[in-house]
Amino acid sequence: MLPDSIDQTLTLLQREQYFADRETATVLFLALKMQRPLFLEGEPGVGKTALAQAIAAGLGTRLLRLQCYEGLDAASALYEWDYPRQIMALRLAEARGERPEAQSLYRDEFLLKRPLLEALLPDPAAPAVPRVLLIDEIDRADEPFEAFLLEVLSEYQVSIPEIGRIAAQRPPLIVITSNRTREVHDALKRRCLYRWIGYPERQRELDIVAARAPEAAAALQTQAIDFVHRLRGIDLFKAPGIAEAIDWCRALAALGVTELDPDSVRDTLGVLLKYQDDLARIDGPTVAELLAGTPTEPAGER
Image (cartoon, rainbow, N blue to C red):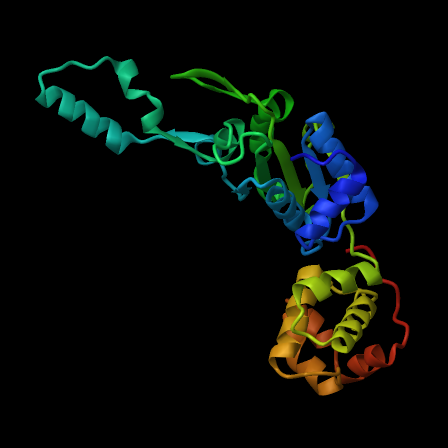
């Protein structure tokens, strides 16, 4: 069942352990209400993909995910014909002395549906709610693929030469994410509602960690989040996201750590930071300063 208000949207997400701010819940509610795609930008690990996963679970429908990469084309995103099965059907018909028409080889049973096409079709398990399609990391795909998406985003339909036009009876919720490794074309953004997702404020991140890493003691969760927030104040190549903060709390709990100390931090920094230059910068004195709560310099543009 679709949420009827922003508050219901917040509640639905919280049931799936996704703690959105009101602005994010508002744009998600509007995307569902107005039947518009939703474009999410932000640093890696701040919860863009998790938002699509949470709303799909909350609506009771399976998430369809299209992971973008350089060279992604229509065949991988939309559909392909199952040529081996078509050839087998043709040979069986010839063995029976039949001469099948070419059109008979282009039936639904021979159509391999990829995420874009599947999103336009109703979900047999949940026909009363829209499908949820996640187009993840669109900035990794080539610009021609963006142009290919425009028909789907504008009209919720695609054209298959052998079959014709396929239009969605119920428009899906399309969630597009970008880590902003390159600028996405304005033509795509204009067709979507937009939301920038940044790092959460402290209390909301504590709520997220408490729900996702309950094995860590409450005091350890508080110390870890305070440390991560101070760490984000340093101009790193890649600051830790929410996903890294959750993993860090789980790692500390797995090691039996109940309170942060310089040794436990240094031993587990590789869970938080993924680049050698960042690891080299957070040396012993810096760790001690961060644990003590010493203010750090504000982060520059990353």
